[in-house]
Length: 156
Image (tube, rainbow, N blue to C red; front, side):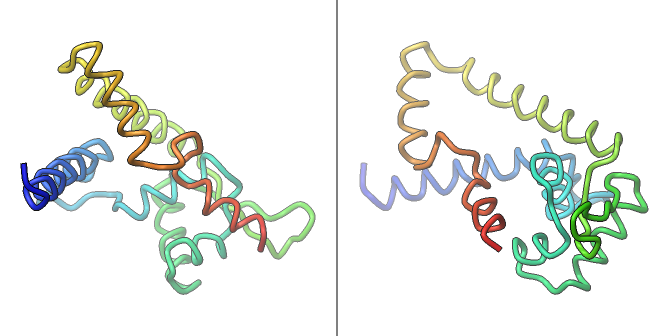
């Protein structure tokens, strides 16, 4: 198999995973949806860390007014709420509401089922090799994918 063929196969597999994730995150194709990829990420991140408005601006490299638009929308739809910092009242944190936590949980369940269904197509030996190779491919597999971002947020 040639290198360009490997790259093409990898690209096609990544495309499949991308489109599957759109389904997992309940972002219907061709229909207006309540959530976008970015708003879904904001909800998810707010569930794993104390997320400030300024952090969202840095993560997505957008203006604070854009972040305000995102958070206003998510708050209006009932997914998140703003909470003032205890030490510094100027800090505004985003926290998931009950609806937001339910969305996070449902997405995690769907993601787990997706992974389990894919692994079920492999033999036990293939699973072991696949996991080992995927961990090597990803790199910092022992940390969450947003670990670097969270460390950078803690520095600021």
